[in-house]
Image (cartoon, rainbow, N blue to C red; front, side, top):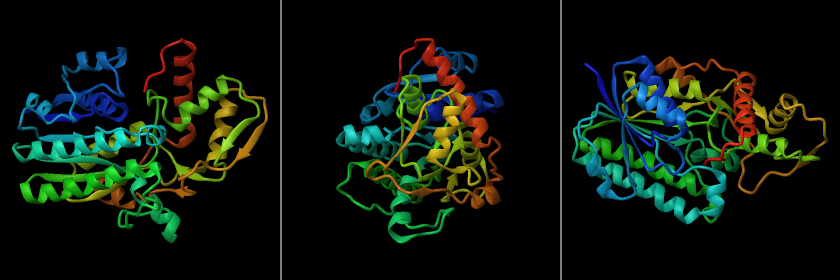
Length: 332
């Protein structure tokens, strides 16, 4: 018998890839719920919807009434919907707070009146980024690290604040209302079709614009990048694995920590850049180092990333160059 799956935010980057992976595996009755603010019903998503007979519920789920369009007996509910991206935290921090908080609270209140069996809430490494900076906690960093915001006034941290609310909210509601819940914290997930609000596609655009000298902001900062296929695999393992109720898992690649300078120079080599590079300071609120300890996910879930960063970045760059040279519109 097929598992009934609801993916809130299923038209977005990670959501769409989860839909495709589940569709390829078979044995799932899939529904995606989305307002298409970031994702869009392009040829790729339309084909996935058609190929795997996916039910699409378009609505603004910041309105509680939208949840009346959904059924109430899903086996798995993936809660991915949120506004994400450093640019949004700077330009519309008030809207980011409003939208993400409404999505979280409306989903939780809807779950109270359902018989849904298990929910997975997607969080972020941003929740503990301030802890590393302020208190020098270990890197790679395990799930037990305290969550911390360095400067509550800084708009850069509005996204992290909403994800902290979500982690607490889903764990507490699940205890009270009797559904299972698992949290995953993503660490720099990237890949084709991730939108244009992230570092890799923005760097591609700058190289195509022939920026010279090419400014390398936060050149000495490090990140551990996680290719989309591995992130999706880890997410599904967290949802469907045993002994995951009430647990938090870091989903990333602890073997792929690199400096921003190394990343940009590699992208430049792929794009045959012959100009000069110019080191620049980091943007305000950006942490100096971040890398997850994924040993818990490996031990409990059997999660182990396969795609190393150079391979994944190459695939991503090739997709974006082709997309942009075709003259397609830049999507969110």
